[in-house]
Length: 96
Image (cartoon, rainbow, N blue to C red; front, side, top):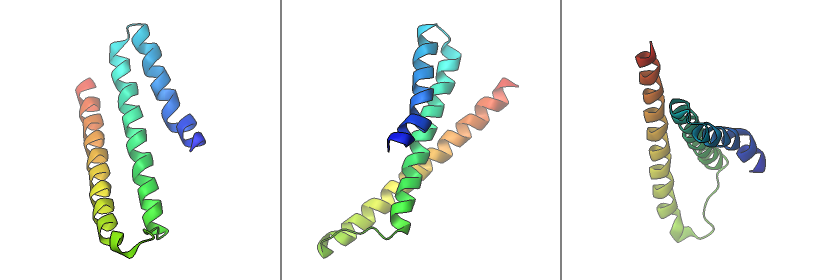
C-alpha cells in the first residue's frame, strides 16, 4: 500500500499543490485529474484482484450483500474511469 501511494498518488498530488502555490492553475487541473485517475485505477484494479482471488465474507449470510456491493462498487469505479478518460480526450481535442 505504501508503494502504491508513493508511486501513483503522491507525486501528482504534490505537483498540484506546488503548481497551485505558484499560480499555474491550468496545470493544477491536469495534476488533479491525474491524481483522480490514479486513485480510480488503483481501486478498480485492487477490487478486480480481490474478486479474481476469490475473497469472500466469512459468514454465509453476508455473501449476497457483499456480492451486490462489490458489483456496484466495480461498476461505479469503472464508470468514473470512463468519464475521466472521456474528459481527458475532450481536453486534448480542445487544446488543439
